[in-house]
Structure formats: C-alpha cells, structure tokens
Image (cartoon, rainbow, N blue to C red; front, top):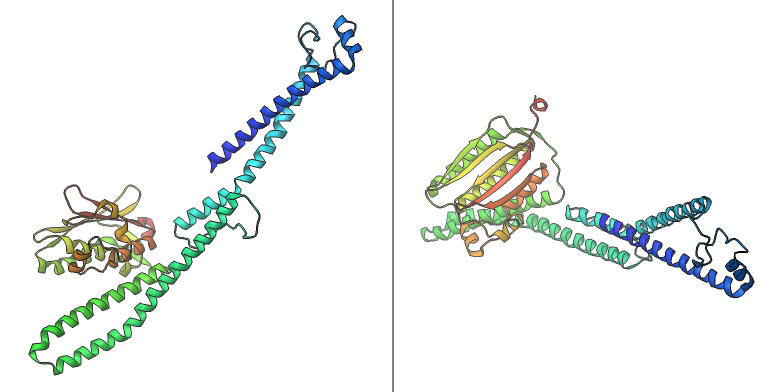
Length: 381
C-alpha cells in the first residue's frame, strides 16, 4: 500500500513538473513569436539596442537577451515562483494520491481482518457509491466475505444441531442395547459387543463435535485459574502410558518444573491429551511417545510431543489441525481417528493465546509443538 502511494505521488509530481516545463517553454516561445510579428517596431528597436529587454522575458532568443548574468531580482522572483509552484503542485499531488489509494487501504485492512478470523470484516464501501475499478473490487470483496460468513455460520450451526439431535437416538440405542443383552443368546454376544464399541465411538465423536462447535462459536474462558503445566503434563503422561501398555508402547516425559499458565485446566488437558493419543495411534510397538516441556526465551511454555510414526506429507502439516482432515482415509479409519482431536487442540490453544505447529522429524515421526504464554512468577504469587 505504501509503495503504491509513493509511486502515485512521484508519478503525479513528475507529470506536473514535465507538463509545467513544457508549458512554460512553449509560452515563452509563443510570446517571442507574437512580439516579433505583432510588434515589429519593438523588435527592431530591441535589435538595434535602443530599448533594454524586459526583465520578465527569459524566453527571448539569444540575440535579444542582454549581455551578462541575469539580474538578482529576476532570479529571486523566478525562485519564489518555482517554490510556490512545487509546494502547491506537490500538495495537490499528495492529496490526489491519498484519495485514490483510500479504497486500497480499506480493502487491505478488511483482508487482514478476514485472514485473522474476523468474518464480519468489510471494506465499508457502499453498494450505490460511485467509484473506479478499485471501489468495485472493494464491493466485490464485501460480497465475497458476506458469502463466506454465511456459509461458515451455516456449517457450524449444522454441526451443532446434528450433534445435539444425535444425542437422543444414541441414548435410546444404548438402552436398547442393554435390554438386548439380557435376552440375547451367547451367539449374539460378539455382534452386541461390536454394536457397543461403535456406539461408544459415535458417542465420543458427538462429544468432540460439541466441543469443537463451542470453540468455533467464540467461546471464552469463563473459568480460569493458574495451571501448573508440570503437574498437568505428568497427569496426561500417566494416563496415556496406561493406555499405551496394551500396544507395547510407552510415554516418556521430560519437563521443566515451575511453569504456570492462566486458563482452563480441563481444556488444556484435553488439548495436550489429544496430541499424545494421536501420537500413540501411529507409534509402532516397542517405541515411545516423547513429551517435553520447557520455557522459551520469549517467555512461552513450549510443549513438544514426538512420535515414531510414518509422519505427515509436508503439504498437509497445517491441514491436520482442520476438522475431519484425514491424511490417509483407510489408515485413519483403521486407527480409529475421527479427525477432530487435533482441531480441538488448535482451537483450545488459540483460546489461551498460544499457537500449535507440526513438523516431520528428520529421523522419522511427527513432532507437534504447543506454545503457551507463561505466567510471571510474581503474578502467580
């Protein structure tokens, strides 16, 4: 934007200077020609030296000019006129360039707000307001932003409504399953176990959808407290290590003590736990998922979760934090993943003023890094 403004200002100023120079040059030449043809007697007297040349006639031919340097008053007047010409012309060029780039500034600000997640961002250019192509572009952007906001709001509303509506039939299904177990024979136990397993998975998915919907709809941290990340990480590691025992895996924790953050403890636990469980799904038998907690120089708590799985394609390292993202359809379904856990992590961390990123490790596996602002020790006391 600044570059465009500077370019327009310089272009207008150069155009003004060039046109002014051409205009004054032509004016002096025309004045000289008119003097010679309309007043030949004056021209003849000037050539004979009977009349001194006028001091305000700098465009005269060399034969008409007086010998020697121009008089000081003439140079002073010419300098004052040039300064006035530059000041007035430069001011007009500045205002013109500022006025022409105003829609671009509005559009740039709206684009930045939309990129930051503000779906209500608009340029503010009225629909019936006359303007050039830039103003038309701003109005087109407003229509696009309005359409995007409508679609995303409708999508979130649909997910929330479906999640709520599925709760009732799912509860009835669980009741019917319990009744069926009482009357079923031993041959039906395997099928009923499968139904119970899928019902539990569906129930967990609905719970995650409701959590995701709550976070997507601008949820705030209504209940906050000082959370000791060391204790929270130890709790998550113990639970995950217990779950990993069945697959011959383990969870290794290395942490720096005394790091505290302000936020919702349960939400932070779920955010970290989702990443750890995701790592356990893809870590082979006999390997470990590593949890590291340390403080960065930017006064942030850095949580790193490293697994020994196949990793993620580079093009999808950012997409895995989007809802229902699947790196490989068959593999994810086999592992039991729903594609919602990492999305909840990203939104929960953002709600606490942090960030989450992922990268493939050179030695193999995926590393997810969570950054959270640390509470000052003085503030904690």
